[in-house]
Amino acid sequence: MTLGPLLIGIYVFVLASFVGFEMITKVPPTLHTPLMSGANAISGITVVGAIAAATTGAPTVANILGALAIVTATINVVGGFLVTDRMLRMFGKKKKK
Amino acid sequence: MNQEVIQSTVVPVIYLLSTVLFIFGIKQLSKVRTARRGNALAAVGMLLAIIGALLELGVVDYRWIAGGMAIGTVIGLLFAIRVQMTSMPEMVALFNGFGGIASALVAASVYWALVVQRSPAGKVYEVLGTDEAITVMLSILIGGITFTGSLIALFKLQGKLKKGQPILLPARHYITFVLLVGSFAFGGLAVAATASDSVVWILALGAGSLILGVLLTIPIGGADMPVVVSLLNSYSGIAASMAGFVIGNPVLIIAGALVGAAGLILTQIMCVAMNRSLLNVLVGGFGVTDGGGGGGGSDEYTSVTSCGPEEAAMILENAESLIIIPGYGLAVAQAQHAVRELADMLKARGTKVTYGIHPVAGRMPGHMNVLLAEADVPYEELLEMDVINPEFKNTDVVLILGANDVVNPAATKDPTSPIAGMPILNAHEARSVFVVKRSLSPGYAGIKNELFEYDNTMMIFGDAKKVLQGLIGEVKDL
Image 1 (spheres, each protein chain N blue to C red):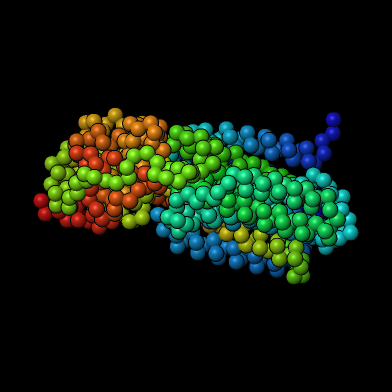
Image 2: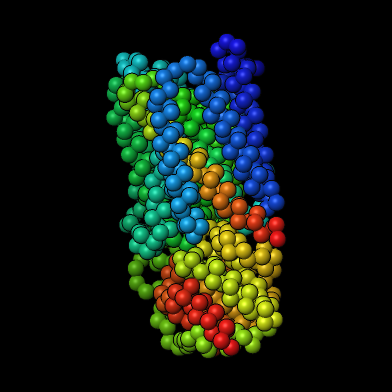
């Protein structure tokens, strides 16, 4: 049996989905919003794809689409992680008391 | 080290590290003690993945990449720093939309570079390969739906679209179905067409996906927006995963799948909390009778008693136990600090103060927890619905701050009510109930709350923060 790249990709996708399902079984309601927000920041991983899509200096359609993808994905990543941290910082501070 | 070694060994190892960090990050995000570290781990994983992507490229023209990342970082920073704690749900929805459109744009860019620019005469499925061509289409479809769906959710959360009420087009199910089938058809036609002919089909697919995102979200009521945002978050993960298939990058496939699965589970948890099925939420039109007409029961209030802060303060002062039920009104009024101040004063006088948190209070699960944590309310005082419900019978006073549907007894008493079966906080069982609310207008379910007419209920009309400040002043003077 030889697996082509698509099949390997599907294997990886299915297994990773199971990991995702298993990880999120027990979460206290307090953390639902931060968890959603943190997971949302991770979905900004598409920035990696975007970087590969804007590799020349020429103002071609492909490059412009790629650069737009970089901007939007970076907003998702930077904003997402920071906002999550801001929320979680609030849970942290009362524990010290 | 030459570029070949970097490509074959260094970059894959970096990507592997990055995925491991994502998994640890999400795992730790689900426990209170480690959540902050988990978020930081995930952020490091993201940084590694970006470094990996840059190394993989080798020497290219970095100007567009650097420019794009700089602009994105500045905008992301500004949003993250300036947003109020009360608007977190809107922020998550907005970021989510950006993530979705980014995945669609990546697919569109790859398509344009490889197909339209390089080989305009070839068939799309021959140039890209059938698999990759299909994932390009799926990426555009899911990314587009996520984008406009998130924006509509954002507007609904802000109450800008018909105050968040469902918008029901005639024959909306047919329109949506036809559009979905149409979008698949456009995608299929694009895959089979020659490169230069496929552009028009891709544009049709893009437009179809954007309209679908709107159509799928507008019939859903504002109260269900948390579920929708969570589901769209799952979609944006899947869109990223599809983009991963397009460019053949495992870190995108894995991270996207993780988010897709985690988002789906979280969505399910929220639906269970509302005692509704996901399908029921998505079909939409909650609390609105499709055929027009009044629906059962009167929407008019007949016997409502209201009072001012003085009277309420006197009863509060003599209460031995108080349960505070916060809702979205608390968030809107930014009254989280005022409520803690009042609670502190009453506690100093010997009153036992706890908070009853409904799983879907506010606009996001955990929304109230975040808000009250901001005001330093001790974590142990926030009690979940199952824990607090047996307590109401033995409680002197319940203070409801801008919550409505989650305390409506109709959910348990009237089987014909649109919210029948939804678990509620049994506030009506307490000896006296104060409801702080701006008016008698219905909540997101769009129905009357019979609790407001109960004999043991007093309304205090006004903005939650102003009322609380009034109460604080009165308690001080006592």
